[in-house]
Length: 104
Image (tube, rainbow, N blue to C red):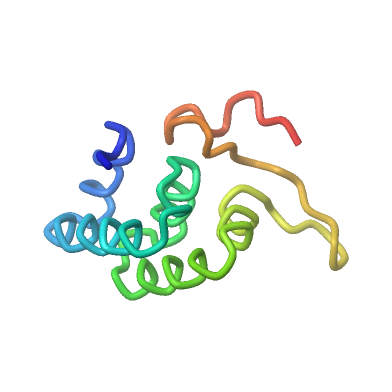
């Protein structure tokens, strides 16, 4: 698998000198758990990690159990109450486009 250009660019921007390590961590996870290989899940993990390798590892591990957790945390903002969320991002789209025309 190769990452889309926007994902590669975001990894480079967010992780800087650790970009190669972050990429390796993602590829290793994808090789172990095939369903992590969607662009949406990868974007959510990278977004949540925010350039931190420890957080990247944590979100990869979370996604291996249930990808819906990282998608919820990355794409939705919690409003009031336990089950009150509003979608703010759609990581089916590129990082540059993810906040445009968000549909719930």
